Amino acid sequence: MDFSWTEEQLDIKSKVVEFATRELNDGVNKKDHRGEFSRENWNKCAEFGILGMSVPAQYNGGTDTDFLTAMLASEGLGYGCEDNGLTFALNAQSWTVQLPILNFGTEDQKTRYLPALCSGELVGAHAITESESGSDVFSLRTRAEKREGGYRLNGSKCFVTLAPIADVALVLATIDHDMGKWGITAFLVDRETPGFHAGPMREKMGLRTAPMGDLFFDDCFVPEINRLGPEGAGVSLSTNSLEWERCCILASQLGAMERQLEKAIEYARERRQFGQAIGKFQSVANRIVDMKLRLETSRLLLYKVAWLKMNGESAMAEAALLKLHLGECFVQSSLDAIQIHGAAGYMTETGIERDLRDAVGGTIYAGTSEIQRNIVASLLGL
Image 1 (cartoon, rainbow, N blue to C red):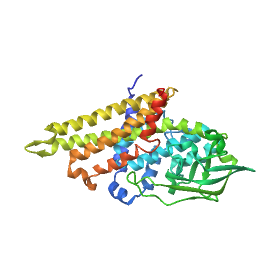
Image 2 (image 1 turned 180 degrees about the horizontal axis):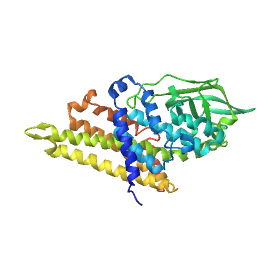
Image 3 (image 1 turned 90 degrees about the horizontal axis):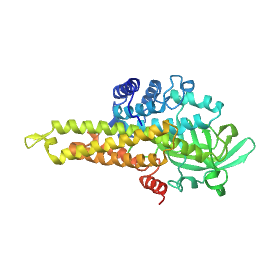
Image 4 (image 1 turned 90 degrees about the vertical axis):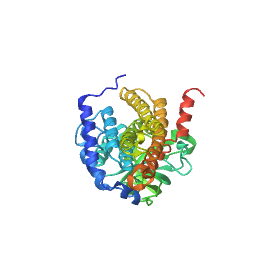
């Protein structure tokens, strides 16, 4: 297992960091306060090639990027971009919308959607969660009834990232609830489709710059050419993309943790109390050491999962451990960063407290910490 990087890969990461630092950090606190999504920055990322890293060059209009390099670039994005909501939304579209279209779509679907999604012309959302099926995701109730030439969708989805602004939604619905998870089928639903509409953006604790809302389907007719994969393939589609998604979304969190650590070290060296830098006090230094330990253990888990996926191996347990560990580490390190900065860390203007609000979401979305523990326990035979 080789976790070393080529000079070319490190150069790509360096360029992503430089781009993100230069282009994506203006007015982050104000955008967060207003819950404002920056379409301008989204388009900058698309132009730079961030959104194209999950698909081959024939669809992204640029170059081919292997998965390990894409993950490393996501890490660089999280380090350079202080807007955790933006990095979260970019990764959500790349790995839960674009990748399933690439892996399960027809050639017509790929050419219709992927170039426009990669260029920023279209925004895509992945709609699976419902009010009565969150962690129990495959008990969803949105129905897809077969009709001549297609399906009629009825139901709703909630807590959908990018839903309020999405041009296309990848929607999971059941063709027969009695079939359980084997009835779950995926559809690509365009925004202008009659019977499909999005609710307003919902306010939330963190990741405020990533729009989140509800989607509604009222006798929404979806032509058969917009079914993604065969009937009943929704489970395979979701599980196929989940491990890839976790790697890159969590890679951006890892980058944010590294940025967070560097700021804490810098502050602990400069801030003086009782005649010396506060980093000389063991209680402060220990917090920083713990932040470093969390960063490096999270990095090893992340790289291992990425390496397994790159080599075509299953990483169900490893991905669950990664999601659990890194998500909870980001929360604890954010608390430590606030404590190290004291009152300044508690003030919105410094941006330190924003990381904590954003980090909490990582213990909930894409499978809660509790669900990750259940997955690992089950795989251990418990």
